[in-house]
Image 1 (cartoon, rainbow, N blue to C red):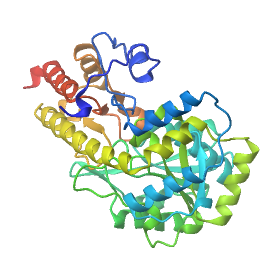
Image 2 (image 1 turned 135 degrees about the vertical axis):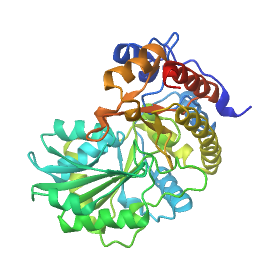
Image 3 (image 1 turned 45 degrees about the horizontal axis):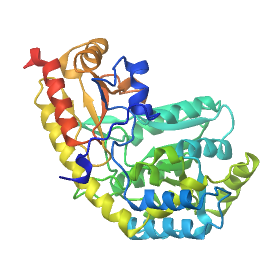
Length: 391
């Protein structure tokens, strides 16, 4: 049995994914399946709790420092896993990457400025942009042969000159795309044409399907170092979202200085527990665990997609990365309220509503299959039953 097959009861553990879903979706954790919030139902590699246990055994939880080992762990991971050489002084530690996004908005834009999103895309971006008093500028992705593509001619025509930043989700959430080198160069040229700071959120960069390869934006020879901010984290890769730690990595000295000033002005300092877990995870033991995880997720993906695509009118978008299936219900001819009711009330599954991801997501639901395979099989069976009248 795989280490990922163990069914861990998370109910009553202050889990957003399991303990909040009834209030959001009306799906009880007693008989429901939580397939919404993007964390996994797996334990992290043993090196992570071992590092935390050493902290507990010591018993004094003071301020964290020095952070050389933490920075070197990040540098080792980026070099060995992604072919990207990072300097220590490029790295900032934030309280997760939503926090990192908010700090970028404060550092590089002003209230009223436009911030470009390629939609549909991770919903927290729009929430933080609006919460900061900036304007969300949606550039809708095109749906071509069942997957998302960019149309820069159309995007160029939408620009007004008020836009100051573009946020790229790479790999793409919720579409599961790994952007090609040509597509990434297209984003880089778009940012240069319109004088935009480019924030590349690459939190899913380790969660790629076997045979696929993620390309970090910073490794392209695209001439954008003076406008590029890279974001990554251990939290998604190793299922440690509660540690609230992220890496904002800025090669350019001018951009780095401005970001550092904003962090200093907000008195943001590292979470010692997050620093310890990140240092432990970015290790050879962590790398082995990630390889096993991705192989397991690929099995879950194939099981889920086969079951979903067997239902007339439903289509799961082909995935290259992440553990988030993006399912289109448009072919059923049903109203959003009807297919959502069937998923939540009949199948008893909590899944993210597509419209929260912006333009283009209205006919979709997002399903998190980073859970033991038996639960994925159960979800498929429930969905097939809920839509049995179409078969």
